[in-house]
Image (cartoon, rainbow, N blue to C red; front, side, top):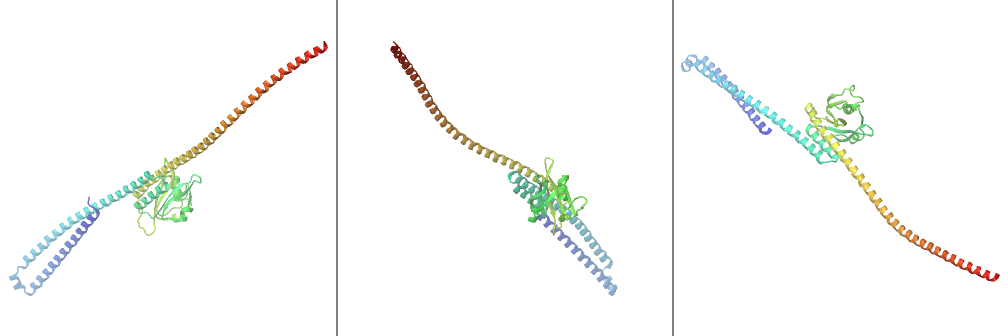
Length: 343
């Protein structure tokens, strides 16, 4: 298929040929008219002499047939040029559609690459939102996620919005346009004035929209947020159903990125927790080893003390036994002495 530049050059050439053909036809008609007027004038003045020299009717018919043949040629040429022009325009439209599809596929691939290669949710969301802006020619937009603690929609990534808007925006589920999409789980294509009956507590900036797309972010049939794209300001573009479908594709990429990021954060958190537990366990092991060394040392001291105590007790037993023997001897000697005295 030819490129758009070559097709445009051919269209310009055809248009130029058509104008040249039209100019030539007009020039021939003017010449034919001047010729008829001149012949009529000459016939009126020199009727007999001119008639003898020139066959007026024959010349007039010949000239008329010549002009008629040229007109037929012009009509046929114009018809061919018009057919060729329509064909080139149709091919140009197809080429433009193909270029658009290539851009769409490139944007989706770029977003998919970001999802698969980057685990930082902020970077992924930024890449996807910028790709959506580039493809759909949006002027403002944001990605909002549901805060699990407050159950409110909060802006986590945006483009074209003021910092204070990003910081202060909090939307309840079911309220305003974004809240309605989050509650219903259905995409919206809006333009013009927003009907407040359908949407509760519509934000002031959303009451009049040139063109807007709001799509839910879903993971496993659960809505976790919304992506919003707007066209405003001096832009004359308006979103259509095709743009809505493309936004839904990007919404799927965003949801996947968020899911991957959450899994990554959870894995990272578990890894850090396990590392902390391992560190504490290692410290405990060190303490246990130190306590074990101290316990062994205490056991040695205790064994030494026990040995000393046992030895002392044994010595005391021996001493007592020796004392008992001495007492027995003394008692026996005393008994003998007493017997001698009595005798």
